Length: 137
Image (cartoon, rainbow, N blue to C red; front, top):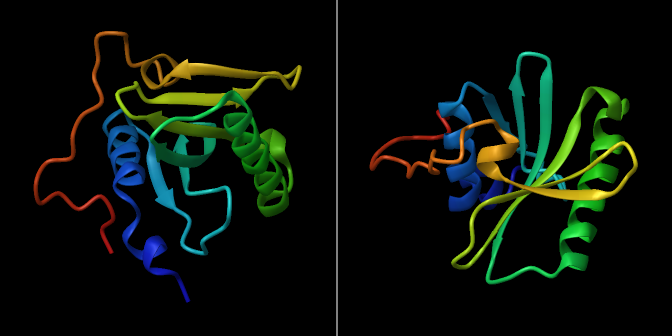
């Protein structure tokens, strides 16, 4: 049975899902409460496996540890990791939304949400309109 968190999703996950939908991604949440994976976002041939976290602050080591877990869980859950792109979307208090990923050299790189998803630097993260249901179920 899905946990209460998996049924409702946390506000940050919903915010990310909503903004991904606005730029053309099909977004699905992971209901089985898989550790290290919250959302799957597809746009054409690109499939992102996403872990989302909003904390007071993050250390570099914590970001890398969470991203490594997402990469590992993506490999376990989906097998061929070449078909999926594991990313960690995160935000600290008073900070922008950021995206961490591993390159082919396995080094972690961090981007702003807008640059990773080609939104343009002037585009802002949209708030979810009052009454809008991110998850239709």
